[in-house]
Amino acid sequence: MKHKIRILILIICTLFIFGSCMKPKIILDDTVLLPVKVDGKYGYINIEGNIVIEPQFTAAYDFKEGLARVATREGEHIPINFGYINKKGQFIIQPEFYGSGDFKEGMTNIFIEEPDAFYYGIINNKGETLFKSKEIMIYHRFSEDLLPFQNEKRSGYLNRNFEVEIEPRFESTFEFSEGLAAVSENGKWGFINKEGEYVIEPQFEMAFFFKEGYAAVEIEIEQDGVMVEKWKLIDKEGKYLNGLFDYVGWFSEGLCVVVKDKLDGIINKEGELIIEYRFKGLHPGFYNGYCGASLDGEKWGFIDKSGEFIIPPQWDCVSSFQDNGTAKVYIVGGLRGENTKIGYIDKQGNYIWEPRN
Image 1 (spheres, rainbow, N blue to C red):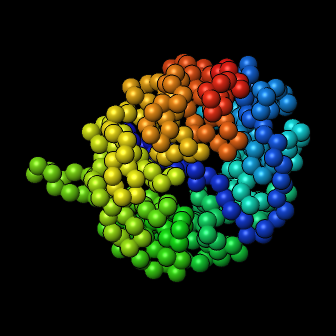
Image 2: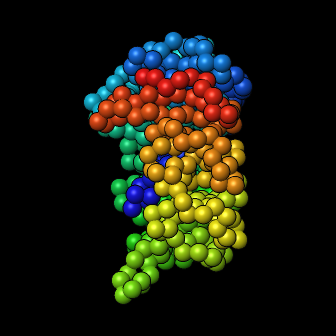
Image 3: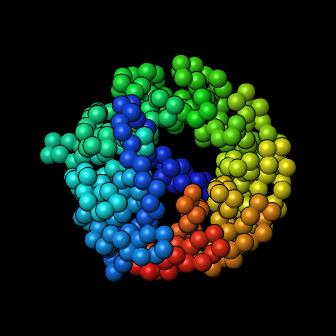
């Protein structure tokens, strides 16, 4: 269950960005700016570790397509009043949304609180509203031209004109990946194609998206006279990869994290265990050749594809390495993490920004 929650949180975070139907002009700027926290406020540094946008926000996130999501107020439990700034720190879209996502292909999702209702919407990078509804709920993103949505009872998919493409007949839906999407009906999960037809019939307790040709599915089996839940990997024909696991991640750079007897290891696409079960924590996959890893479940560092630590465990939490060659590292503080310090390292483990709050 612990591993399931961890992966679900990562997936939800990953799915909180959207695609585009209008193909608006995308802002291109390869200048790397990283959000940091100083004395309780967020600003941005450059890759040399110098502050270039003064700390002033209650929350700040990575730049996507030249714009960064920032919040200007603190709500009861979460930041609110989100808007978008450019790399000069200027608001391009004013901070007026209760919540929002990051831009992808010139578009993002927004949540609007108005006196009569709570609205879900989508805007372009000019701040123009493309879609707004209080009946249709949107939690995912456009992927392969289709967008999962949910009404009061069921889930389906919209096309890029925001018309219903696949009728809402499912209990739950994920976004499309590699031509298929995981959906649930009558308590079981299967996979549909873009016509809404089942390619793999509902039969699993849970299922996630396809990545590099495989998807993780949860099955129920009898073990020592007791029904237990286990995880396997399947291909697009519904054929199982060798191995039965307590939990699995997803394939990334040809490798997949698997869990057995509360220890994490790594398999290849033949189902062979190439990194032994010896970790008490691994990120779901490799990114840019590195994988976050912990031997004791408390201190984290990074391993390479041989399973050897190239950056020793020393932080309470780490993020994956990004394409810009940086990774966030965390030193947790406070009963609820309110005093957590955040820093950045390069691929040699050197600080770009030492952890602080």
